[in-house]
Length: 386
Ligand SMILES: Cc1cc2nc3c(=O)[nH]c(=O)nc-3n(C[C@H](O)[C@H](O)[C@H](O)COP(=O)(O)OP(=O)(O)OC[C@H]3O[C@@H](n4cnc5c(N)ncnc54)[C@H](O)[C@@H]3O)c2cc1C
Image 1 (cartoon, rainbow, N blue to C red):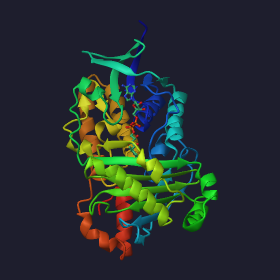
Image 2 (cartoon, protein in one colour; image 1 turned 90 degrees about the vertical axis):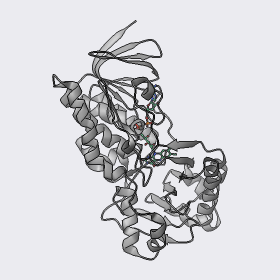
Image 3 (tube, rainbow, N blue to C red; image 1 turned 120 degrees about the horizontal axis):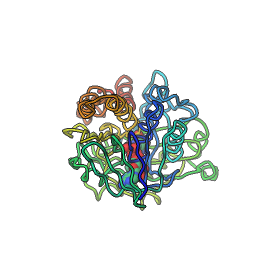
Image 4 (cartoon, protein in one colour; image 1 turned 90 degrees about the horizontal axis):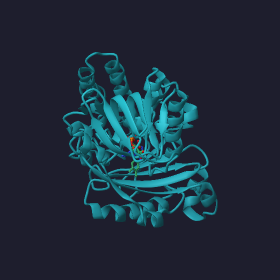
């Protein structure tokens, strides 16, 4: 059996794993990045990223324009039946809408350019944490050995059990489902009636709508329209069986109220329903195991207010890469790894936490009071407290 030796093995090449691999590759470490998928791989995702990602991309020397396209500032907040609207104001832009398959692939390509060895179509079947090293076995029986391991294998990863991390208890778990259409301009061109205005604006700047208070509380919908894609998704804190009917209803209401240019209710009927461990990172005792750090969705780094996971995944990866850098230079690498828990909590906990306020009492204000709408926009898109 062939065996390769690296400084770090990163399992999972989503935004978390690729960001960490890129950062470590830039520092000259021998990094193996492993994923079971063949890239570019499809991902069900609305693809919005907070504008806060810009400094992170700059640190990685990735040009924001090339990686993210044009930012959006056109955000509409809706009440649950879409009869009321408010427009939060932002100092600059609110964020970006990206195509996830291309975005993830671009990050990996940047990592490879910095010397990272990428094993795609390579499922990890076994991980052994030995006394002085980590041994990772791939589905083709190839073995990779490294000093340290970064686990970035995404939501619900079975590898957590193997390494001894507890399964996420859930924080404020949400049911998430999404309906989408790609290449909507051609679809939209054929539209008549109320949605045609929205169809025209779809050619310009991306638009994002947030439907608040779906359950009278923290559940919400997201409506995203960019020049070549439209998506509607629900993030639902209630009973599982209500999530898909809710998505179907939201698709119809969003189309009927001109909030999106196409009726996605048919796609919604067969949408995949997934449980997102929103803010579960906050409930975990530790993201550190022997020779190992846990980042991204696998570690529950998801914002409770907005279910945003891409930027928190990259942020946790950035902190982890700094810790790994220090650990690789230290005679006491495990002691260095242990600093990850306090570092991410200090920097990220406020961003991940749900707003301290019960949103039910604020909802009526948001549609009549501009400063409240602004604060709601900042809470959702920038993780600020309400
Ligand atoms: C419907 C929906 C819409 C969403 N919309 C948004 C949004 O608009 N904005 C936002 O910020 N977030 C959104 N999210 C969340 C976002 O998609 C995730 O937070 C993000 O993908 C996390 O990145 P990651 O790198 O941690 O994990 P992932 O992107 O899931 O990557 C994990 C990788 O690990 C690989 N892997 C897993 N197991 C193994 C194994 N055994 N061997 C090898 N490889 C393995 C997988 O193939 C995968 O490529 C959405 C989620 C859902 C479900």
